[in-house]
Picture 1 (cartoon, rainbow, N blue to C red):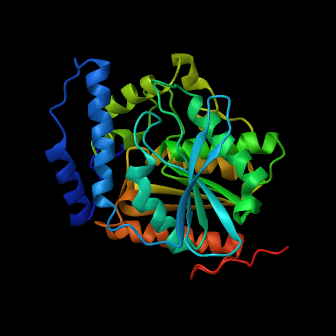
Picture 2 (picture 1 turned 180 degrees about the vertical axis):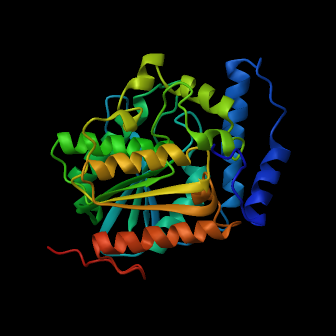
Length: 330
């Protein structure tokens, strides 16, 4: 019989949970959607408090990509001058919360530690813009980078899609769209993704790690708010674990966190990718919490995560991890 005991975490990770518990209002299952959503968004924004000091970079700027829904802001983080490979990173927040500002320190650290430029789309949020708006906006950003990247010294031939939490879910769904549109990718980075949105999906970690960043009841309500219809829980673009033909033409880095309710579904997705023939590098960070990407200022597991990403990208894209890019030719 599987143990119901939660996994061990470090004192610093426990401190993060204690802080969040102190800031969170008492649970109220009868709260209206508006009240619940405001609380969820507040708690998501609070994760930025654990990200540490924002790294100084060579340049941070915004561009705007044309889309059927108006200009889409994309924030570009450049760690150094020169012609750089680019990481299209889709931030987490359940598709209903979060912001580029809340992820800013994490995105700066991603650029600084890897030497890659990071492009982050400011996608629309549900319920104002329900799924698939978030995926559609991410595709707009991808196509903009392919078409205009060279003008901004971004190497679209070394373009990796990545994301954390729901962003990882969107990244792997975007890779399928890219494959079908014959847009080549250099890789995928999937950080603790939520890949199975089916109602009450039976994953052991959802019980043993419940309440560690993610509450099971909040997860189900978040999915309801995110999706346009309950039937979309079975849509492979929303639940990539249900994708019969995942994109496996490019190498994939999949990172799960041991103390994360989403651990088991992420590992199930890894098994599916391997069975399909993917070139997969999979790691489970011992003692790490969900959203560890935003905890570099508090927990050592975040440093481990950034180092793993940096090494993997070096193997994929050949950029010097000291932040030196290839000179722009021509």
